[in-house]
Image 1 (tube, one colour):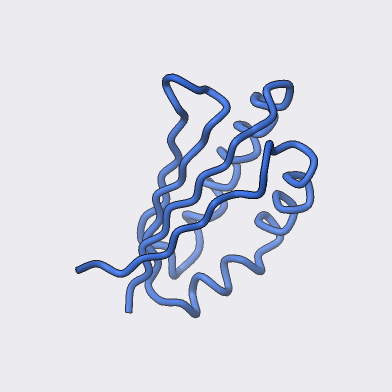
Image 2: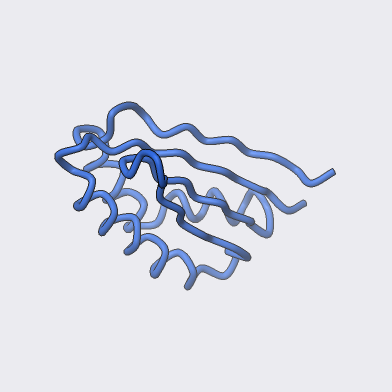
Length: 95
């Protein structure tokens, strides 16, 4: 079953540029993953500190593997101090 995921991350203003660069790297690396169907990054117009991913994964196993990748683990480690709050992750199925 495909997993549709939306992730919202809010950078602290002083780290917005650094977070954006890190997220853009996630796009490059994640699109190489076999289970990744769709992985788009968006930045807020009214709030440039807000970033939203729209993702589609082949299945939960592929998403689980994604979350173990070094590029994801590196971002998670850095994000704790550079985001305003923990990312919001919304997993869905298509109806």
